[in-house]
Image (cartoon, rainbow, N blue to C red; front, side, top):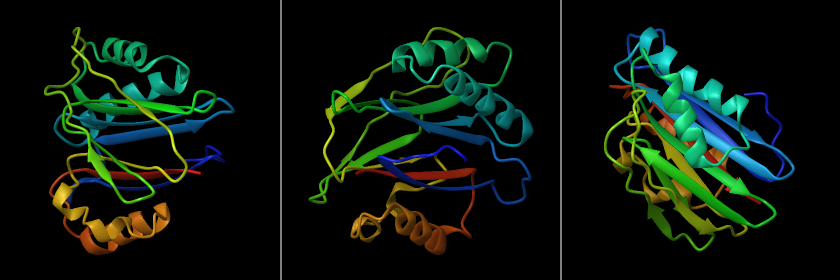
Length: 198
């Protein structure tokens, strides 16, 4: 990713399922003067067709980063007509109002960790996007300095995200430690993104 980030520090780890060339997960992030957006999509199945679907969704988010999460999900859904479905997680930060919002459909995990070490795990909506209207739920929160967001696809087992990963709140070390401890265990496409609001 070549996007410049200033207020949100970010680190990402991504690997395809063992034996695959293509990773069926795609991700995108962008920071502007007013906002930050980050998303992960996991195409159903694995390989090239899964990658095609997940990338189609990321292309929509890249084209319309300023839309609300609800409007983004609707446009992403439209892009999936005649493609494989995806599960999707989107995080948006609004700098002027110091708020954040996120939504997760399917098994994209989203966690927040406060500067005091309090962890909160989002419960995603069941199902996936397939081009047809889909119910959605958006969670809103107040932004605070030092807040860490962790987003991950189902290649990451939540038990692997041990509390020791979050002790120093350094996103590069969180991702590197995860890779060192779990990089050889890839039963599925794997994406882990750590973000910290400074």
